[in-house]
Image 1 (cartoon, rainbow, N blue to C red):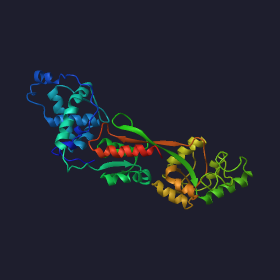
Image 2: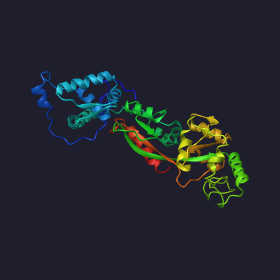
Image 3: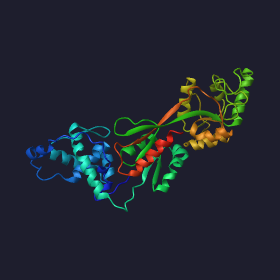
Image 4: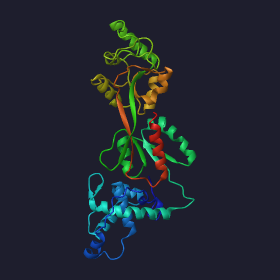
Length: 369
């Protein structure tokens, strides 16, 4: 999220976000400064300490620079200057971010409380309003589910800035400070970001009634009457409505072969969702080419509802169409494929109180989905 420069009110500085403070113990750095470093006369520069705390809390020079509103080279130079003053290295440089060493843990424990209190005092004021909350995630999930959940917060003065995209680049942007919260389709690796399981999305195999009926007729012509009772009871049987009642449709063990001759609508040429469904449910590779590709699942839903063919969708996206009969479930596996979404943020509380409001609203309502 874009930030202003160092001269901004202190409540906006990252020292305001209340890191969990390690147990305090006397630091040897003051003695080192006075006895070992000839350049260590006088008090430490407060800006160096703020920069250190920003890097410590974000785990990244890039993210700290975004929080402080300065360039990454400035942050790097300030950390080097502080390390020279203290006579100690503070961070282990890694390919992705930095890791604090024990000395940095101890220093952060002494600095966090005082700097946060200073930021509170300097930033207090009746006219001060929180910054917008920057939320990012998959376009379909944000637009179909989350914006409706968060809409009531606008009346409470919460401002939202929404971005959409793929998980990997969004997580990189989150670490760099561009977003406050990201809904991710996979758990981030490492400890640079904090992730909490948020929601499970179940994938369903669906088609419009015209294609469902055609598949049922093809099966009946090949094998005769179905053998497992009314629709919805046997493997892969559903009927025309959401409850699976009605005339028999293709059995699960035969369904992949039947669908091979029907047009498929997909999100991308490599068929990521359908391939996963085939591996999980049918235990085989999907050998197919899409008749239609749309890089937005809402477009996939529209095409399939209009009769373009069959597809695999997250259930949250097509519940209404299944309930109304505009789409039919083609298969009801006992163990449907599920993907867990995670709510991800940078470590430690945000200095913006509205981030906590949005986060709590999302986590609370997710329990009822």
